[in-house]
Image (tube, helix red, strand yellow):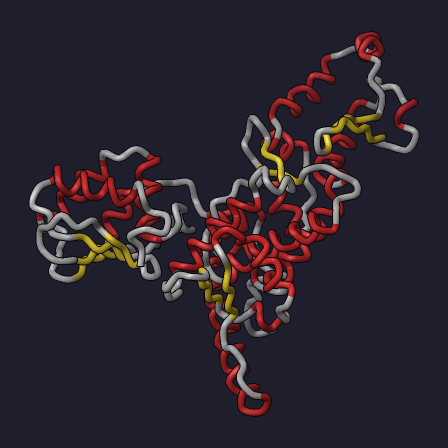
Length: 402
């Protein structure tokens, strides 16, 4: 485009918020295109579903999702997602899919599946090391990457804790020593201590170019270079040892797992504007910001049904929320939106609405999570509002949300 600017060539010209909006627009355009194509195909080949529909059981989320996604064509994955929990009447206008993503991500990253392991210090999740993962483990890894891609495509923010190295690798950027410092601070400090040792001290350690790691409870050994078991660690080669160790953590130990994970992610995001993002921007796109600025949320909230900023119950509400801990604030976000994550650009971008839901009563607040709407009865006292609100948000999963 000689007369214009290709923003993918100069991605630094755009803010993370702008890039996020471009990706949303890109996704909406592709969804509409698939919707139109579905109608045209239906005219000639019979009934074709215009949406990507997943019908899943709460007690078998991963298995049901894996089975159904494996049957989908690539064009189906680019349709707008609709989720239905078997045996439940909820219509997915956005809220059900947000709950679905939260639940299935929690399952996939649990000890039950064992495909990810959390670092005890940083609490970041990384691939469980292993040179020969099972077929089931690789399928689950591909599903996890696909789920993250679907979440990005459908503008759902996830509560996942992946290290910056993961987002680098997804964008083809090599991981470095600094990434190890963020992921495993203790290991990083130990490796950096090698710079303080003399040849005599290193010889005393009797360390060679090998690394030990645990794979499903068994201790295994890996040579960092060919013949590494017979190469002693010295002052001359310690930087090579450190770099090979970093390479083992982020590449060698999880090559097959990451390959499948990235293949799943790229089925959705491989050819999109996502490729123009920096790693830290992709991280924001996937899991949002950690900045719980409820002042920004209060200033940007919209009121409906007769409420206004100076309505007494609204004053009660914000007085109560200002006194919440961060944990309670996240629970409130989850209750009202089906996600406790903060979108790129902060809480002012949430489009949060508080609507009147009748006069004073003993009813609990409810929410339209599809549209980020909190339905609030007009309680007459701040004490009653606080008690009713806390009861609602402490029981938010699958309760009180419409």
